[in-house]
Image (tube, rainbow, N blue to C red; front, top):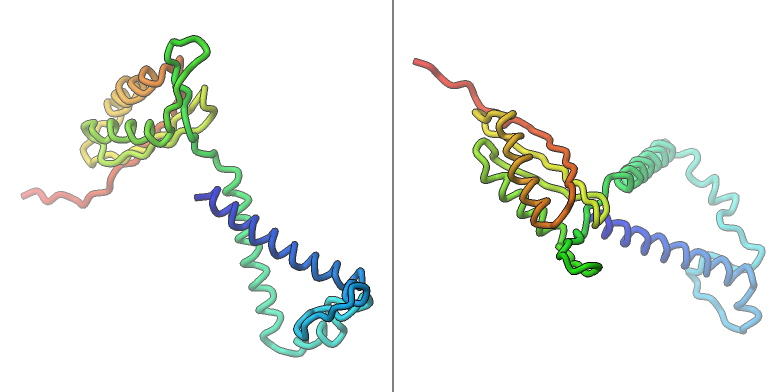
Length: 199
């Protein structure tokens, strides 16, 4: 998802910068006069000495009550979106594939990261006391790391569940992918439930 957002944002910013730079370059080099063509009436620049914002444009909205609050709100939204985008870049990226050791020397197979995540989540959800499981693989394809988030049922035993995750889910994933080690971070969260009535 983040990769798609990055591509769209970069494409839009690139197109906007290319269009603005082309318009400024066209007028700055006075190409319409040199190449004998005319620009359309809506074209923002008329010649090489034209400015981006004239004095009247800069002062046009200064006396309006809504102008400064609108500018400040727009800049605040832009700042928040920029901060969200920057923080999203720092999050750990999901691992696309895991290198599986097949015992053929230098040759190996590639296992899709999402397939291994799905298998681990399904096995974790089959454990007694686990209501829902989310698995995310990070790191390098030859040295992956697992992050598991488990939603426990109200009557689950966290210590026993954690031992089974370590001994079954993580061990099965490690051996099936032919990894020497599979470091993992497991986060447990208990499912909320209402008070039971005793009669």
